[in-house]
Image 1 (cartoon, helix red, strand yellow):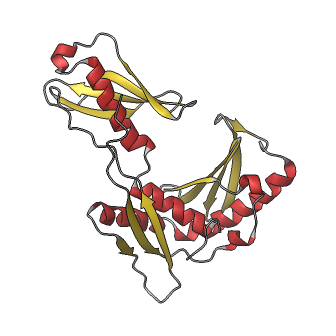
Image 2 (image 1 turned 120 degrees about the horizontal axis):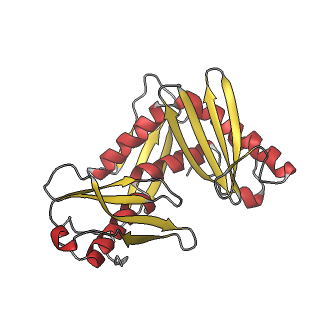
Image 3 (image 1 turned 90 degrees about the horizontal axis):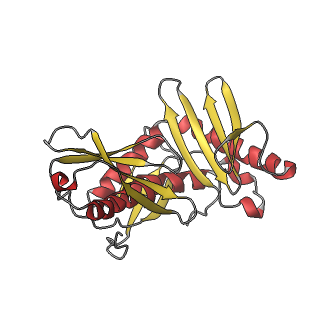
Length: 257
């Protein structure tokens, strides 16, 4: 098992971003829905922004383009559903709030994602303040976030080369791929996934692997893979942490100091 005490210290990241108007801040969410999980992405091909809003018991996805906005719901287990997973009165407020947030987010995309990625890259280089570029004077927002320190892990000490990749299945599984000759890793030797009950990673060695050829015992490989899974799939990185803070600010879920 990975030693969770071997963590790098948390760091601070300050970023000045152009977030524009915040109409969703005028809507107060019901108290039990006051802390949604938020994520956003941009589809270049469709020129569509996608906002993901997750509450206990379900999700709301909103897609916005030049032709309008569409939305749909998901149950708590991730399955799509044609009806809201929440009571009607709560759904009305949630939908109003999320629609305003998605409408404010769309004109910021994809530049906002570019700024967030650049700020995270600056942070990784040791800089603690990033300021976005603007073409004319506008009101900007200062965000300050705490970035969790990664788990300290050793480099791969076995033979050949390894990489990891997402695979099909529930609970965000990945496969550890190996190539004994140092080429592109293409042979699965182990898997890791998220235990939905404990929110911790689980691992397993795959059958038929010659662990002597791998150069590490199966138990050592699984412990190493657990650390990789924690760093890349569980512990929030600077980019994800800052994007969450930006969406919270747009949604009126934090207060500007």
